[in-house]
Structure formats: C-alpha cells, structure tokens
Amino acid sequence: KAGVTQTPRYLIKTRGQQVTLSCSPISGHRSVSWYQQTPGQGLQFLFEYFSETQRNKGNFPGRFSGRQFSNSRSEMNVSTLELGDSALYLCASRADRDEQFFGPGTRLTVL
Amino acid sequence: LAKTTQPISMDSYEGQEVNITCSHNNIATNDYITWYQQFPSQGPRFIIQGYKTKVTNEVASLFIPADRKSSTLSLPRVSLSDTAVYYCLVGSYGGATNKLIFGTGTLLAVQP
Image (cartoon, rainbow over all chains, first blue to last red):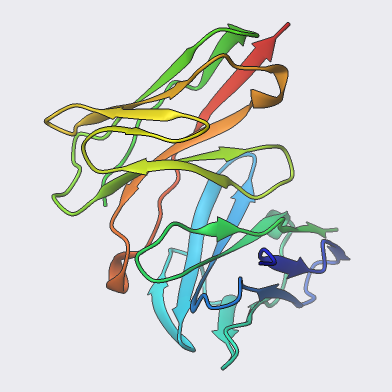
C-alpha cells in the first residue's frame, strides 16, 4: 500500500505570494491532518479534514486554509506569505481510531 | 488536551538500551500514549502506542504505570540509525478529538 505523498517536496516563494500544497493520503484513509514544523515552534497542528469537512483547527491565522476532496486528497493554501511561514509542512492521514501516518513533507521557503 | 514533558536530549552508545521518559500529568481517561520517531527533513514515523501497562512490538517497548501520569519508551540495543527526535503524545483517536499536540521531543544521539 502506497504511503502518504505530498507535492511539491520543495517550494520557494516570495513575501506576499500565495501557495497551495497537496497531500494524497493512504488509500482508504478519510482523515487528513496538516502540521507546520519550524525550528523555533516545533510541530504545530494546523487542521484536520474528515470526509471533506474540517473537523479540527489549530491556532493559526486565517491566511492558512485547507480543503479536502471526495477522494480524500487534501490541499492546504497559505495566502499573503510571510517570512515566518518558511517551514516544513507535513500531512498525515489515518483510518478512523488509528495512528497517523505522515508524509515526507513540503519544504517551503519564503524569501 | 494533555501536555507532555520530555528531556530535551539524551546520549547513548551503540548496543545500549535507551529509556526515554515522558510526563503527562493531565492525561484524560480516554487518552492513549503514542510515540513517534522523526529524522531530519522527514515526517514523523509511528513507533508504538499504548493505554496502560506494557506494550511491546518489534522495535520498542512502552511502559505505562497504573496512574498513567508518565510513560517510558524503551529502545533495546540502539544503533547509530536510531539517532532521531522522539516525540511523546497523548490524545484520543476518533471523533472530533484527534488533534495531536507534539511537544519539543527528545533528541537521541547514538554514538559508536
């Protein structure tokens, strides 16, 4: 069974731009969660989607948004990028009542 | 959600057993304890999960005392490739409560 895949793996943007990251969960997993990891703040929960509905949300500004499609694939969007948004963005999927499986992440650099 | 406290770093040598302890004083009745391993620039990888007493799998053991306010991850005979950050998390799975909060983690450095 293929693991969680994230695209792109690396991305460079400039301040003020927007970016969309994609995550394909493990087949059969309906829950997709997003995390931001930075050296200073560690791993922080962004939000979780389950069956196309946002089920949980972390403490991030509204510039961070996401969505999930009927095939469980998820996208995360960050608008008006700031230097502080430079981070490794991780996606994780899970079947209900099971552990989360993480993807390799997307390394976003904002210049 | 329960907050966890772990040592920031630990050092070990190849072949030794390593025990990493995590404190979670405010663990809820329906919370599980889960440990993840993370290598640089990779996503965390699930190691082991438990609710109480002892759980063992092919890579680690997890010891949880009766009061569940702490847990210990035991890695037998570590190798250089076990150098990584280890995260302890508590939370319940399923429903609307799946919101994992990662602590600072423990950086385990294994030396030859």
